[in-house]
Image (tube, rainbow over all chains, first blue to last red; front, side, top):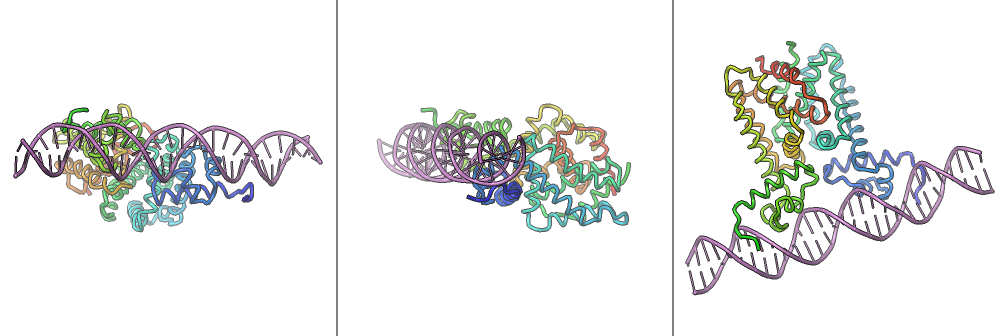
Length: 180
Length: 180
DNA sequence: ATCCCATATGTACGAGCGTACACAGCGGAC
DNA sequence: GTCCGCTGTGTACGCTCGTACATATGGGAT
């Protein structure tokens, strides 16, 4: 049999789950499909994650961390010389530019919190993390509003198929940043 | 056997689908569950709706119409004496106030467009309808931004479990309405 | 009166699912 | 060295699902 006490086993399963959701959506997520993708036996997935909710929590948390790292790496949100609205609009453009796969995956896990209370704390983390980054440049209320607007704009692009309009996004974000 | 050529049959199935999604989410939607809810045989649902996507399109469209009617009935968006931001914030408060069932149902069908291209035109209709109503009071760009912000604020309430803060929503909406 | 077809129905099939459970083997406790 | 428990594995059960299909029937067209 395969080696025991594989410390990477759990991580391999999470990575596989993310690939499965990216390819076929949450609808295609099952203990079996993840096991096949990760090339581990069925019992291994059910052992490490009793329920699919648990697996989704781990996958969403990992996706969030990846996004946060990508934002931090870009660094524009910390540079006081850049305009927050411009920077956010550019960030969205970059995110939405490539194929839909990446952003679709993250939003699908994020939106799954609508019906799965277990995911809500992780979804809240995402909002708070982004709002926290923005709080270095604006007040908390504005930061929160910006996060909501970013979410709304991305969603409309993804849900309606409308192409992303960076100029429009920048203008809308700029209005929110303009204090009371 | 039951009577033939029942003209209400199709409508009964759509109504049942909406109740099923409201109760158990899209995950619980199947030809069988809808057939049971509508008290029709299985073959009836598969006959009228070859795929579940078709059924979801019909359900989302009906839900959208219900929402549009509710907004129109409130009427505040047409009264030039009211503030658009205040009116929208109040509308959201009303919508989010009761149990989550109604708004959860509509958002779940709406968000399903992320992965189901068949739903995107209907999701786009929803955005355009609301933006159209708002266009009587503001320019089209502002209207579009308001719709995005409304979506974002509602989502964050629903996804994170945060209680709705009408004062905050009104302030954020007000900033967007303030012309550039 | 006859025919045709959209509508309506019941049943059966194969696939995939979560779950449960018995068993295997490693590693630390003692 | 012995034992125990956590990690890992394979298999089988019962269920629900979409789909296909043979069949029934009513009403409009001819």
